Length: 389
Image (cartoon, rainbow, N blue to C red; front, side, top):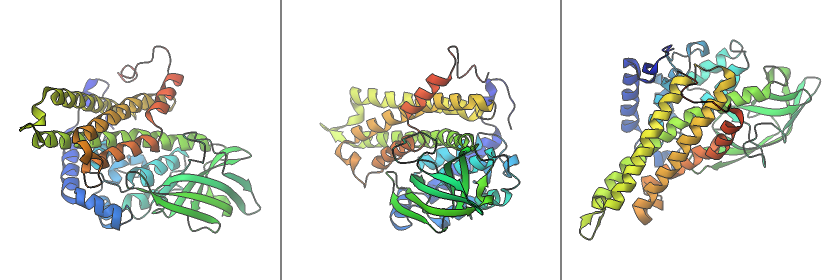
């Protein structure tokens, strides 16, 4: 882990630069726009062969620190990988099926108990799905609809979860539930009797499911951590996902701007490329400014995640996420408008970047919700940069 205390901690090391370049080459070679569309249509939003390559290259393990059995040398490495995934529209569930639920398990303090689970995640052989959202609860992470009651042999779950990302591909569900001791988390095999799923495709081509638990009996060993500690564990997973998907958003912003610049240089009106019009140039310049601002904020986020105490991380993440996702929504909206009517068609790549950013914004708390969280938890003199340096 990088322990620099000066602004040099924002710069990439040589190893990090090499990782960034290698992932960029890999995604651009293996995950073209045609491959993305084929994956969404034919492989049910997950190409297992591509996922195997991701695991074999060590990209999943590079997202985990050493104390999680991974080999990331700093907190920046998962951000570098996910930025390129966002640039390439990669729909495989690295965040929703691996990193977010992995953070929940790590927050339980039982890392040795789940050593085999972490090994399965990093090898690409296993996926988890974090079932935390409930109908009508929006971004409230406190379980209400799903309840777990004690039985002689363990626990019985009843209730509904909605929009559980990666659930169709995962073998195991990580479920938050209300108990008499407070919110708790349970590790539940998806094929357990009493579980019903309605599977569908999300706006950005991923797969999700609404899940009903009908008298689902699980053993005592299914409880993760201690009963009543579930809210903090789930929040650790949500914070991890909210931070890492900022990198996907920046990657999508970069690709959207590239596509828009290329389009305005080839689209002609009145006998000349529309990129020559001053009004278009101003809009492109504003988009570029939003991208560079977001990149700077992402550098701050990736270099600061592991430096802050747990009590300050949520405020820090929400402050930065609200800015990055706000910038991303503006940029992709401008990109679609500058493409004109073709920008909303399925055949145009730019429409899929718009969907990507929209889905990222909604999946782990939108910009408005994170801005409100930042405002309500920061002190009057709190400063994002001063929090680190």
